[in-house]
Image (cartoon, rainbow, N blue to C red; front, side):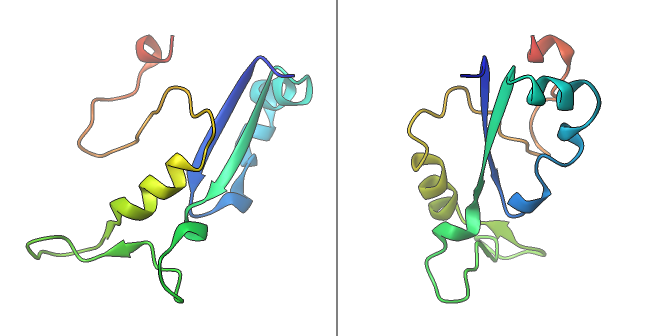
Length: 99
């Protein structure tokens, strides 16, 4: 059993471990010091097109992730632990927070 387990919610699970499989994190992964599970958010889509985004409420440019799909993906994890949500509106994730 690894010391740390990371659950990753992503639209691109095939990209993992990617760079995390190299250098220091790659060695730690090979030594079972940490492990990960990449969950495909698209598996929780509600329609036949497997869409996970929609137009913003109230209009505006761009698309936003559907919260119901994200919630279903998140709650599918039996023991999610601490959640880190990467958002452009959030505070920067720095070394102090990582520790």
